[in-house]
Structure formats: structure tokens, C-alpha cells
Length: 155
Image (tube, rainbow, N blue to C red; front, side):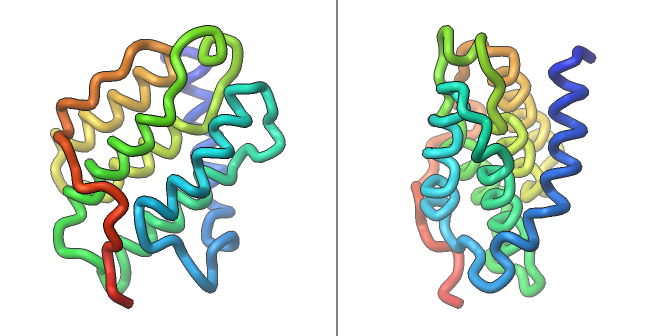
């Protein structure tokens, strides 16, 4: 375990606690909603701007809470978990930006894994988050090619 892993674990715990307050009245209901919240935050963080820190984790946690229920928004949370992780991983930037700054992207991906009931899938998704936090190339073939941004509920 390295300093970055410890930091991610502590940050994840602290940020998850505040997520419920951010989207209490209208949680994100699609993966597209999560990406709209995360993309500008992750981009800013890669550019060294830490002022939006926590916003991507908050929107991701709100979506996870919405999907997991109660009432449960979808029957197949494993698919949603893989789809969300896949889309979040596409926000990763390799190169100097990654090596020179941290983002909350690995934390958001780890949150996506919590929707899965499949231990192997959780492990693979968490590995993607760890790979991103170490600034390595990301391969997402292990979680498949999802349908993107579909609404997970008609509520």
C-alpha cells in the first residue's frame, strides 16, 4: 500500500459522506448525468485546479445511491456498474497531467464497483481505478462494451 492508495481511501470516505447532500432532491438518473458532472471536474483537476475536488465523487455517489435504491432503480446493477466504470475510465488522461496531479477519478470508479454484486467484476473495476491512480495505461475490455448513457429508470 502506498501513500496515494491511503490518500484515496481517506478521501473516498470523507467525500462519500457529503454526497447525499449535493443531490438530495434530484439525483442523477443516467450515466450521462454522471459524466456531465464528472468530465469538467476531472479535466480541471488534471490541469491542476483542485477547487472542484469532490464534485465528481458526489455525483457518482448520488447515482450509485439512486440505482441501488430503495427502491432499486434497475434489476441488473452489474451492467450499470460496468457501464459506469467504462465511461468514467474514458476521462483518464495519460502523460504529464496524470503524473503531476491527482484526480478523484479513481475514487469515482471505485464507487461504480459498489453497484456490482459480482466479486470478480468488483475486483476488475477496482483494478481499473488503481491503474488510473498509478498513471498506467487503461484497458477496459474486462468489463465489456456497454450501452452508454441510458436512463436507468423511468421514475
